[in-house]
Length: 183
Length: 57
Image: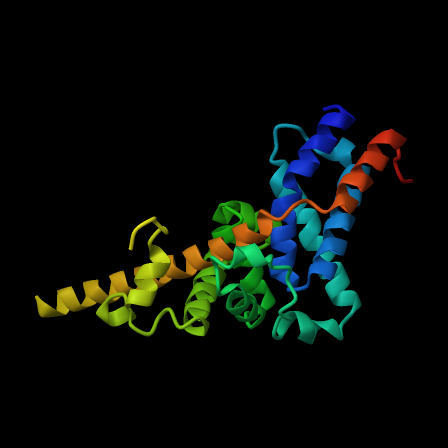
């Protein structure tokens, strides 16, 4: 793969990397530092990337390792990363179609970090359980149970589970329905 | 009979919650992913590409 091709491929993966990093840390500036480190490391190690394997999974692995390196270095920030995520994620005013972005950030911030990353990889980043297991260096079963626990907890935190035994409430139904012109 | 349908309702309730969580998470996530790529990253990669080799060590 030429350097130029590699560069273009990296650019294409910046949005998913940022979404992962911002959701993981809850802070745009920290997330963008992680993305920058990831790009630098990926570039420096581009010879060791095997074309044909998944670049996305490779990049996510680098970002995640970088996250934990920083995470461990700054032990004080553990509480921060595991605590309530500051509501400073850049939300454009025109995105008012989704009113609950902040609720989601705060809920994610209350999940243990291992559950949060598993959920983000599988439910948001379109990784398979197997890919997520490789990225996190744990068994597939561990990823599955983390995702399940994270989802259940998030459902509680977002009050999506209150009517679960009686069928969906209008609010839940609305969340499930694609937005259409009418209604 | 009643027992079975009760279980079924509960199971589908869990499924509903699961899907509601996933769809909300995805909407949140995709909103971030749709943001414009910050210029600093494009500049960084342009510089690296220009520098060619640029291998550490």
